[in-house]
Picture (cartoon, rainbow, N blue to C red):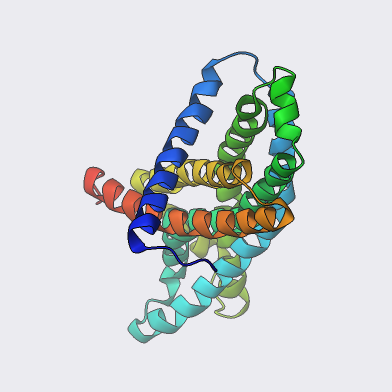
Length: 260
């Protein structure tokens, strides 16, 4: 690996952040320009949403089951074992559902976008599109951003629901709790602020996943090695940025929304 000075490394990172911000602004601006590639959006929605459904369902179910199992050990000490449903619902809806779903989708799709677009860059397909008068940003990037934001919103909802079912399985089979009481506690403990926080996060995370994957893919250089490097960087950057934004968004929403 080539050694560079800390100053040059800092300049390179700042330049990357600046390029990424401009990339995001251009992707959003393309939403208001014609033509609109609606068919491409549907194809990407199918690839991203339907293709990610099995892993999202499995992740949500086992996360909810583990939450119920771990919570029961603590709640049993205080004689509050019946509150398992409340803990599972608030944890899944506010935090674990959106975050874990986004991380799974990032691992599957952000790297996939970087690989696909990076391969098109190194094989000069992007240059051919420009030569034919087609804007690669509008044709390739914007449909992926729209599809990821749209589908991740519903994938997070599915993950929350399946997580509650996973918690119910543990509560019913191992803890011998009543199913109706579990669902009642899980439903009654949720307030508008919890649901709002759980629904706004997937929108932000979906935008991050798509833009990061497309950004590294469109800037891939150096042949097949460059494509592999862009794929790895996209997955790592998307995962880290999701976790960082989760902290920022949670802190902001907790400061602006009143919790009872």
